[in-house]
Image 1 (cartoon, helix red, strand yellow):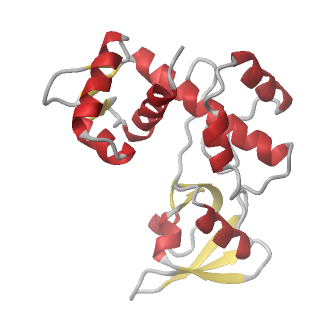
Image 2: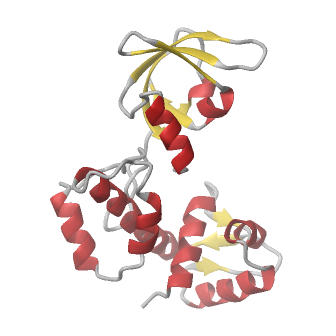
Length: 217
């Protein structure tokens, strides 16, 4: 059975790995706020389990099995978030901390039933893909709202952070996933955007906010 600490390392690897399936010990140390020697010791254990290829002073190479194990931890987290929103009427800003606790439940049957009740969702309440039972992820072609141009018509599809304050801010502006947005103007001074929402009202969003909103065309 995988320990809680190992699961936290696996989840960190999932979020930090590069396109070439590498991650550094230093990145893991900073992300988890754990000292480098402790990370090195854990990665030696991961290498023994064939989850990573470990060589001193070189980036870790995450193996296919390591990627799958990491994705399955994230699967439990995102399924839980979706269940809390869809079946228990939690706000999307309130589910992250609860999912952090429930993701460590080891019953595969429990999460399979959750998946069945939800009718096998592809994305969580924040628009992030939910890995399937084999660790595969449904790819999305998204980009930051801040990278779009004047005149672009886009659909708000995901966020880059699940911070409750940020999500509460979006709630206050009635910005929900699936909403259509049109960029009317971009301020030259600070790159803030004037946006036309699908209810025909306009809103001004700072670049910091637009950096955290992912959209598709």
